[in-house]
Length: 269
Image (cartoon, rainbow, N blue to C red; front, side, top):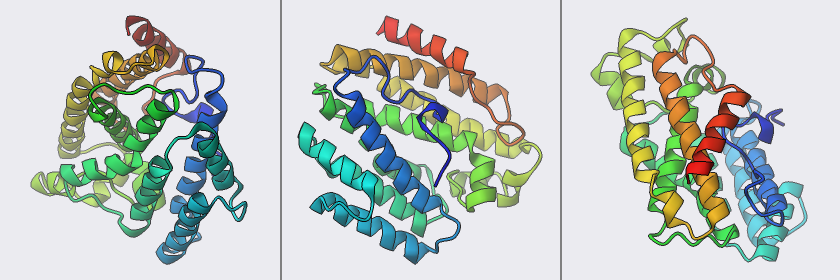
């Protein structure tokens, strides 16, 4: 079981901006996601074993059975109580199944299709839970969630490769600049790997521009402020990743920096 918890995430989980009645449900969704993520990252399990466990979680979520996973059962009960669709959680499971089967990323489009399953459902769930009703659909939400996911991939680029043998950097961009997989395990980024990471950050910044209307697009004002705070944190983290090398050091905002960026973004929203 992963030691990582909600307090270790880059972005707030169940912040005080969300309604008090929603926060326990958000934590149930988060615990479910962490449990599924732990399965996909478990080094003691082969790909087929991971798929079997994740498929079992999918079936349990649909049926509402109490066993084998208490986190799946709790989420089923939460979704039933809040009348939120199971689809978002099932999409997350599809992303973890993909992780079990595929360890490399072909190109930017491949990365974006992965984010559609691994990231977008989280924001979609929050909008449905808070009765946020995005006026123009989920386009801005999906862009924000993809940006957050890719920032996390850039932060973890070295650890993902060494610990999980998983690469979320587009393979075609690496090949075009002669970047080798072994470069991800170096003491620092090579000049060409740095160019590839900056290209990914260019994509992140474009996604954050696409996500900007989200603060005005969500009916729920509390959720809109939450989105504004998260967008501001993402912008700050993107800037940090441009000036610091994620292969050489762990690049992240301090808790104070994150809190200040979140507050400012929320107030502006």
